Length: 260
Image (cartoon, rainbow, N blue to C red):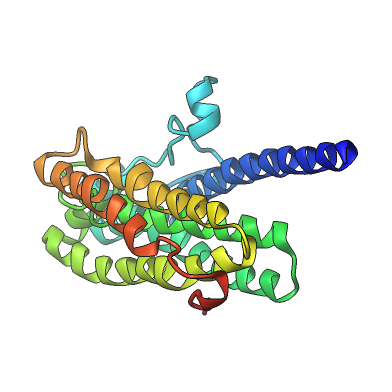
């Protein structure tokens, strides 16, 4: 009996450690594919010598954990000076559209494939990676669309358009992706990873809502102007708790909505 308890405890600790590593890796990958998408499009357009040359920032715990000191290292001034605003806009939107957008679709597909083959660890990583990409969507549109600097402002400046165009053209598919994640992927993941553990299902709901609407949704709270502040405040104080309420596992695992 004691041996069984030790084995169970060891298994749980091992799973927790693997989960933490996967969560960090999924966030790091979601961040890096975004920055490299900027960099590779700039390199392919002749405005950067080395696509791998990001500004990797300083060695600190914050940068190791969150990668928040890493930047695309693209100089947009020569692009605008050459009268190629459309290209500046393409490079600026590449991060969230090509980086996070394509990898959202890829991770969603690989998650479904891993589930079909019963590969729980791979499925878990792909679910977390998908979650990070979905979070990046609303971090930029709409959270930081109505600003005077950063990626979406560069898009608006380059195309000489209103931020409302960005909010509509990118916001609709991005919000649809976030809805699909919470309405379809999350219920199926709750059933797959925690079929008979309601606490595990609650944890997954809280983690998903926190990551998307609090961690990423709060991006515009500071330094991006009043409109971005209030959009992020809405995400944190309304959408975050609302997502938990709507996704709360009220029924048995067998009754959960199947993933698509």
